[in-house]
Length: 287
Image (tube, rainbow, N blue to C red; front, side, top):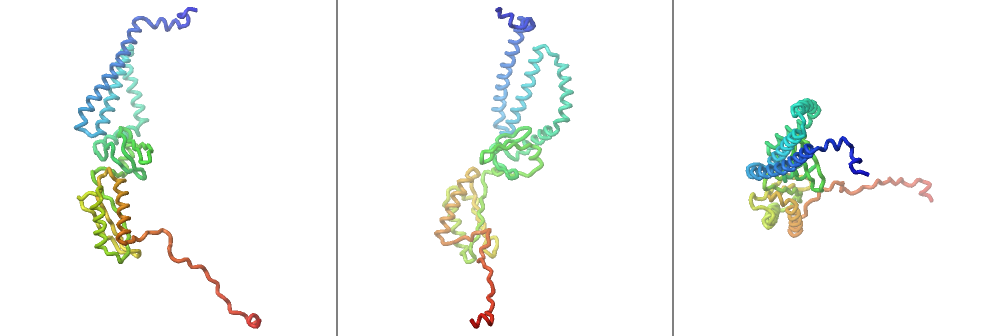
């Protein structure tokens, strides 16, 4: 059986030398244009990295990629013989229809521009949104991506971030860690302050400046409420907290101070109901 008989005649007539040349040209344009676009993005990103923040560079890189892909597509369609004027007219009508249908996306894009210009957080910062806390992975035009500390992936629309309150945990290079203590009323408060200050001074993860905070808050029915705060580098949160908890436990045991534990259960003694004993009757007394 002849191999050419298996191929439709319309397809054979289409594969003329001119069409094959056009396919080769389009392939070269696609591959060369993609490589040139990647090189352009790399050079621009390398140039802007020292002047702009990481999220601004990321957004600029994506905008260049999108516009470059559109231009490359138009060049390819032109090489294939399509009328760009008719295509752009149809794209304009379709764009108007999509604009009404994609109002939320447009709102997210505008909100993303505001978030980037505000610089409230950057890639790598730890932010808290509601009950979720995690590391910012990317800041895109439509949303931001967060990885929580238990390795969950969360996508938050930019429009939601503009309307809600969030906390940038690692905005500043140092933070303060507070410990709320409840000590008995007969505690030597001067000795307590000295003991806590020595713990902070001897712990290498605690910063010397600013100095630790020792604040007597109030007298309560359970004892004296004390707030003790130390300063540390933002990237040593877990190490600092674990070290301070171990040092404070050893310090309280050595110094003989027993902090009052805030139990949630009622520790009053349990009183069982008692039954009144009736005096014996006359008949029972005579038995």
